[in-house]
Image 1 (cartoon, rainbow, N blue to C red):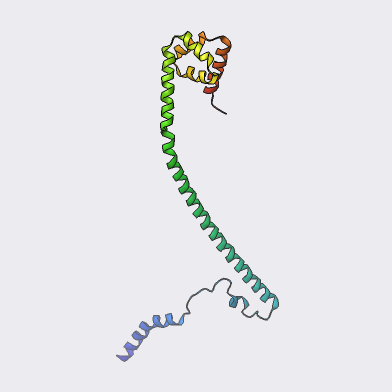
Image 2: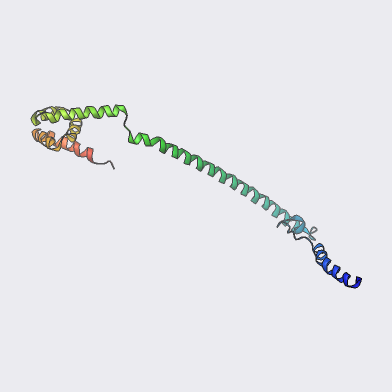
Amino acid sequence: MPKILLPVVAAALLPVAALSVTPPTTTPPPFAAEGLLAGCGDIPEVVALVEELRIREDRIKKALAELDDKKSEIASARATLTAELRRFKQAGKPLLGSKTSTQRAVDADIARLVAVYEAMKPKESAAVLASLPSDFAAEILMRVNPETGARIIAAIEPQKAAILTTYMGARSTPLR
């Protein structure tokens, strides 16, 4: 029986023995100085080359660190700008859609003034509008009913009517 047991035990322990004999597989870093100078420490050119490679490696590490810093600065600045842009857009939305109380009061005053000129006879309106500054008179004429405005312009002397029409056209034309 001991003759049969011995080969079985040896076969069972063989994989364990094989694992302990194999060296661990660790790879050295690419520019390990010990690996570069192994057996060449007495050659000045090799020593100088290894030192130059170390210096380059340090420069590359510093450059990569600076790039990482700049990337983080850019990301932070981008986030800040995006947040500010959103804040400005949100702050600007109420301003675009709403009028201040002063603007509403001015619009109401102009509407009442236009109603007065529409209620007047065209010749009377023409006499008053002809004496007003041209830009103001043109603004009123643009807001009255088109039929009433046509009758008023027809009652104004031709030179003044031409000036008012020019102001009205200039106001309607978008700026370039």
